[in-house]
Length: 265
Image (tube, rainbow, N blue to C red):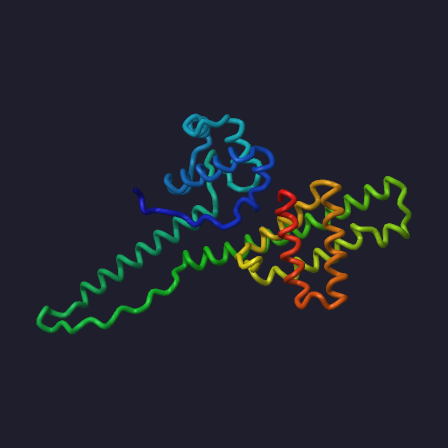
């Protein structure tokens, strides 16, 4: 098995949601296969080879062409397709390999005769290399993108609910205190508070913060669930006001996540 690899960002599916929307998981699978081929071919693939690649991967040539040309993920110039990210990966691996070879040569050239060799010092702890740092940075960026995506979803879905109420003739005064008007600032503020940690403790279990946000957004998949969400928020407010809850934020996160899962999220 080959030991070569390239960084695959956590949450990359979020930044590739345009492909998922248009082509589903088949499009997402083709994208990563194409990235693998780019690494294998030294960073460049000829446009004229797209039909052969589509045949090998058992996808339609139209899908192959659309993903390589229409989503600003690759650069196409003079009949060649490349990716700046892939080229950086290849260059970085070459630099690391060259540095290791040079270090080995220097150590060999500077070694004293066998009778003069001294005991080698204990090994120095290995520090994270550039690839580890790159993965950490990419993970941070994708987590932030996920938070932004779900926060935008809350705003959009509350606005859509308000539009529905307007269409039914709800007055401007009533809209000011309507369920979506109440939910939008509460939920966006909650997301702002919990985004400081990547994981949340719920019922003794560790749950990803993005999973919690996704569960909350799932309340907006039906009118019945939206009202259940509103009633739950009001119930938690009442319990906090009466002193039944010590930590309102933690209680609300757990209550929302558990209710979402019970509703099929």
